[in-house]
Length: 276
Image 1 (cartoon, helix red, strand yellow):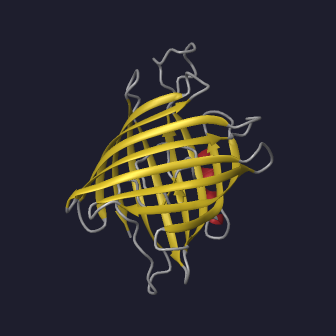
Image 2 (cartoon, helix red, strand yellow):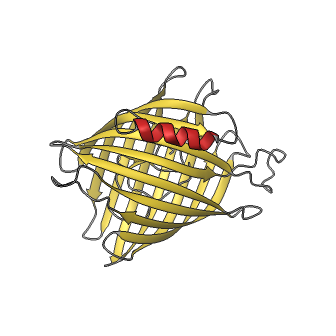
């Protein structure tokens, strides 16, 4: 009931203010950009998690976007399968765009085990809503800024973040692209500013295929954190386009909090995405 109440509130206010990140948690191999990737508290992206570019806005469409379903299987201890859902919406402006993300996702942790023991994964269902303004500054450099809401349904952890920073896209050849983001974030109501750095290397090795390597190093401030915690993520993914707007993908995702030995997990992810 708590989830459905939060989701209903998010859907009502997202077009105007906010109901991501980071991150974001759930994880995905995504180029940096405008809406946080699930699975880390702050990775931003303008692409779907299966690596297919988000549909660009046109004068005949007020919104474009994508939906993604992600199946997770833990690789440490019991598989504990889970399913996440992500909705991205984008409204094109004369200069830039307004991008929103509504996401229900599941992270793993081993906080029920003794310190250093990774045997019994505790799936943590979470919800995030994010709204960002994205504007190109040059052909490669862009500005992003906005607001993120996070809620953990397993443990008390609810907060808002303000996010701003720069994105950069660098073609390394006809079929290789490096996308990066450097962000500064601040929790409303406490703690200092904290950073978020991410990069994704994408290689399109066939007309319908691409592979991605995503690295994410960031700080995170939750509801009760007196200071930022240190986290890192890596994801390696393989994606295939089924049609012009549909794609599937598989990836390995690893998340670690450096000062908490049981706050880590490794997931095998299966993804389906459709654009509209």
